[in-house]
Length: 237
Image 1: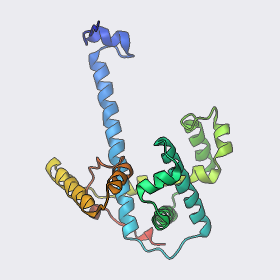
Image 2: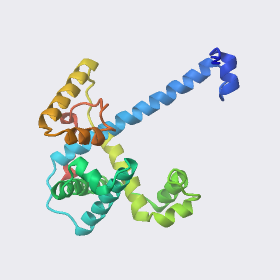
Image 3: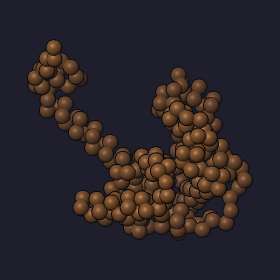
Image 4: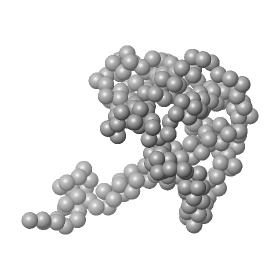
């Protein structure tokens, strides 16, 4: 027999860490706002990085960097395939990832790292040993480790340092970008146009599935068109 309790101050006090409804709702509102702000920032950074990729010139890349990005790319695909309960070759076939497509994806990742490095160097954005140790202390549980020391046995200073530097650079880009507020009507029209363009470009049902998977985290972007982003003069490698 279902017995729905009355949502009141007593219920909140007995079943949560809050004293009453007002306190509970205020906390939940703040939590939801923080989540939305993080989603907004993530979507904005993706648009900024794509703009920089489209408007930067590259004269090549270190072989070691390519090998590193290739390894990370393959590991990500293997993980995604396992999440879908698929073999790697089956997963890549579904996404239409032939050798040429994978090479282009890896080069995009390489170029993204070159951009991050160029901006970090130009803006003197660095990472200290102390910051690396603090990152390990703050995040080792999220990575499934029992201690910061165990975490640092598997992740080198270079790997952790890059993650910290990446976050600093993206914060810098976000803080120096120019955004124009868009109405809900204009945003919906923009997304509809993007969706129509995607459908026109697709030749098969598999490509539609690909679009759904690749854009799962970005389909709710509400940032301004990339033209509004200032391109740093230091993005060229």
